[in-house]
Structure formats: structure tokens, C-alpha cells
Image (cartoon, rainbow, N blue to C red):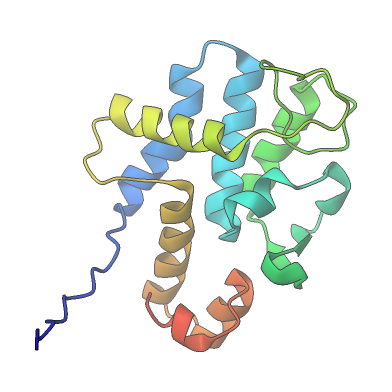
Length: 183
């Protein structure tokens, strides 16, 4: 005999474009190790330029990125798709690769931590989430930002600039258009 009331669905808040750019540029401002600064900047640039999921980003291999700015990825549910990298993100990836000092086939490699000498060791999702939170706090940005927030920001930016919802759906790798129309 208890009547449950429906709560309002919360819509995720996305940071402004300026806040996002400050966050993406933060590694070069706050990191003391040049390789880590270049790597973290390239990761954030790639996240925003492509709208990838964090798991897709951290599983990238060097050979998956072509010079035309396309990345062929295996997404959620083993679905394959292309994402497109901006010229700016490609430049940051190239700067990082030129300075990374590793023969690993993984694009983004760890420099510290347990077993980091393993040939194809990946960066953990927790590390990247921690760094995003740390940069946000150092920059005094009040909106919570995660790797998924950057993905939302990518979709929101495309939608605000007139992109077709079906195109956004393909770029994000969503199965349903309903998922995409939230943006």
C-alpha cells in the first residue's frame, strides 16, 4: 500500500569548453616529468577529440593510429568502429611517441608502478581518473570531471555545433539512438 514517487532524472553537467581546454592542457603545467606530461596531455587530447571510452583509449596500440587521423577500435560488445582524431590531437600523440622511450606496442605506457617493465603493460583506468581529478582540483574547476565526462563533452560539443544525432551515435559506438539523444 506504499506509493513510490518517481525521482527526477539528473542530467550530467558538462564543463564549459574553456574549463575543458584548461584541464586538457594541465599535464604540461603540473607534471614535472616531461614524458608523463606529454603522455597525459596526449591521452586527454585523444579522449576529447574522439569521444572514446576510457577502456578503448587505454587499450590502443601504436599501429591503430594512422596518419589520416583515423583510429580503428574494438569497442564495447566487441563492436568495431572508426573514430577520427583531430589534427591537434595527432600532433600531441606524435610529440609523445617521439619522446616516450618505449618499444611497447601499447600507445600509452606506464613509467612507474608494479610490473611497469612488462612489454605490453597498460595504464590503469584508475590512474587516468585520479589524474583528471587532480588536475581539476589544481585548476579550481568546481564541476566534477571524469573520463566519461570528457566523452559527454565531446558529444555535447558536436550536438551544439549542429552534428547529426545519427553521426554522433556512430562516433560514440552507441547501439541505440535513445542513448545518444541524451546529449
